[in-house]
Length: 350
Image 1: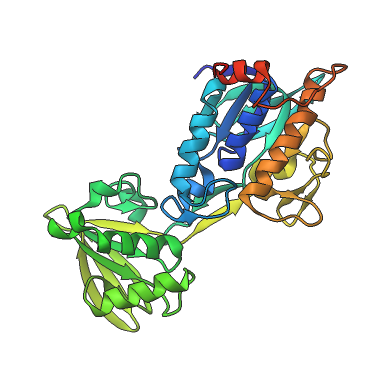
Image 2: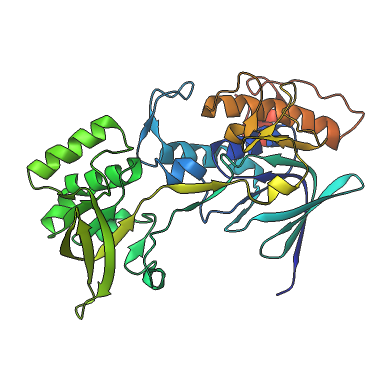
């Protein structure tokens, strides 16, 4: 496979809400950018962990779901047409004259004048179920995320886990008329009788179990997996010492995500407890030209909030502009009045 080469003013690592907003802030300043994420879709934790859960603390938006926030941010950056690379990860970084040379896992070379680490808690992968041979059935019967919830309507869904994702999806399918009316069922398997999810969700699960809307197996774990002749499967379950058998069509496993700093841990950055240290004037790291924003950045008084990451992205963009166009004054303009910003946004004067 021939290597791809990309040249850009700014490379943003992480396509969560803060990474997307970084594209916007850079775009307002006339800075082109490339966005890369190890996940197959944009959105980061908003998409992976709480796509349907309400968010109440985004300024000017009384309530929106994680999915809606990502959709709006995606629309907001459309005028700047960033190149987006998904399902790939930056593995190497080295300084070369006035730019950084970066290599990705899939062989792409990126030359960037500035680098923005917006990777949330770092790259993360789902914690997989430990059962011999079950990996062979991933994406057929076994799934670690729901790509299209309607594709599972009417099926016997078995969910394993005790956190928010497991509880939320169990409730979602149990409440779905389309799922129930087509003969669908929901079973939840959890290794304990205490949960990591929201208490309100736990109470809903308990209530649904009492009314037989959910089959609940607590203090239980999956001990075997076998494919049936009718293209369904059979799980062996160790239920508090008793061996049970459960047939299903879909196995959704939500054991949480395993965050890893990954290769950035070897780039010489100042790192404290899996976070990257920055100054609060520019959110620049100890390496000039490399910035860190969002949950992965660390400084005194840091609060891991989406709105904090948006503030960090704005200041980091202005600092990057000074690096990309040295010697030129970086003036503050407002989208309400600036003809230049309106032109960049593709909006007409009124």
